[in-house]
Length: 143
Image 1: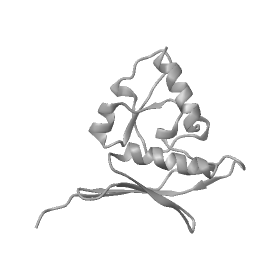
Image 2: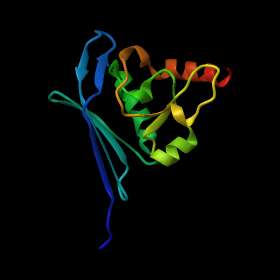
Image 3: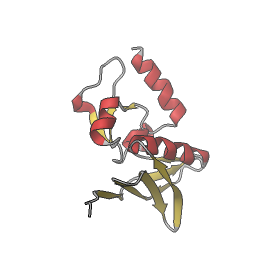
C-alpha cells in the first residue's frame, strides 16, 4: 500500500466583493491536492458554493481559472494573489505549488522580502480584475 500525501486547507477569512453592488461577503476557500489528484479550489459563501476549479500543474493555475470564473459573475475574491501588484515567478510556483506570490513595487525588482501567501486576505482597495493586473505588471516589467 502506497502512502498518499493529501493536502486539504480551509481558508476562512477572505471576503468576496460584488463589483456591481459593492457588497462584501465572508467566504470559505477550500484547497485540495494529493499525489493522484489535480489541484482543486472551491469557494463557499452561505449556502452557495462556487463550482470547484481543477488544475493539473499547481494552485496558481487553479487560482487563475477561479479568477476568470468569479469575474464572469462580477465577483472579486479579496486575496493577495488578486492584488494589482501580485506577481508569480516560475520559481515561486515551483517552490510553493503556486501558493505564494510577490507583491512588487513599480521600478523595483522583486525580492524574497515581498513574498506573501496567495490565499491570504487583501483589502478591497488593492484587488483588481485580471486585465488591470496584467496592465500593471506590463508597466512594472518595463519600469
